[in-house]
Image 1 (cartoon, helix red, strand yellow):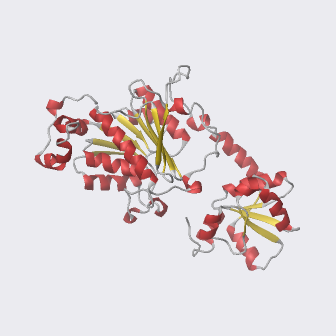
Image 2 (cartoon, rainbow, N blue to C red):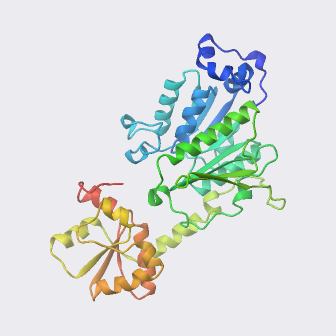
Image 3 (cartoon, rainbow, N blue to C red):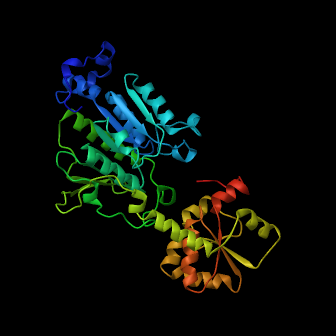
Length: 390
C-alpha cells in the first residue's frame, strides 16, 4: 500500500511525540509518518543484516513488519546480530526479534513466519507486503526472493556482506533491474565461502543493514533517489564507497514461475559429488583420533589446513599447519610430502569441508589422506571442551 488513503490514518498523541523529529522534517512531515504507519515490510532473515534493519524500521514507525526465519540464536551470532541478546541463546530468532521490536516500538504489528522460505510458500508470504528486504546469505534464497518479487511486482531491497566488504541496491523498482541482471547465473557451489568459514567484521552488516533500512524508508516516503540502477560497494578497511551502474538486460529470460532454486544453483549435484568423494575417502571421528594420540601412535602426521589466525585460536595437540590456500597453489603439497616421510596422513579443518578438499588435491599428487569428520569443532564438542569454538 505505497499510496495509502492518508485521511484514514491517524497518529496518537504518543506517536506525535515519538516521531517528533520526523514530523519536523519537510521531506517526511505528517503525511510521510502516516505513510510509514500504513506501510508493510517483509524482512527475510534476522541475522547480521536483518538485525539493524528491523531495529531502524521499527524505530521509524513502519506499521507492519513481517519476519521470515527458522534459525535459533547462537553465541556466535552475537558479534554482529545486534537485535539478539545473550538471554535469547538457544531460542528462535524471530521471537527474539519480535520481543526487541516491540520494546522499541509497541505500535508495530509484527508477523512471524518461522519457516524456510521456499518455492511452495514464497508467493503467499510475500504477497501481503509492500516491500521485501533481503537479508539472506545464500544464493538459492536470493534468487527465490528476487523471482517472487518480480512475479508480484514488489521492490526488493538487497544487501550482502563478506569479511570487510558489503554491497547494497534496490531491485525491481520502477522498471529498474532485478537480481538476475547482476547475477544471471549463480556461481559454482562452494566457490564463495560462507561467513562461518571466511569471517565477517561484526560492524559491517550494521552499515549495510542501515543502508537497506534507509532505502526502504525512502521508497515508502517516495522521496530522494534510491539505489535502483546503482550497486553500492563498501570497503570497511579502506572506508570507501563506490558505485557500479546496473541496467536491465533486455534479453534476460522472462520469470514466469518459481523453480527449484537448489537445483538451479547446482547444490544437489555438488552434494552428490561431495558424497561420492567422501565415499571414496577414508574418514575417522575425533574420538578415534583421540585414541590414536592416547595410545602414543607415532606413525601419522596430523595436518591442519585452516588459516593461521584460526590455528592461533584453537588447535589439536600435535597438529601441523599447512593452510589450504598453500595446498591449492601447490606450495603446500611439497611441504606435506616432506612432513610425511612414509607416515600416514590425517587431515582436519574447522568442520571437515576444507580438509576434504585438501585431501582431494593431495590425492592428485599421489598422497592419500584420512579426513577427520567434524573438524576441530567436533573435537571441542566431543573430546576437549577447553578448546574454544569459533
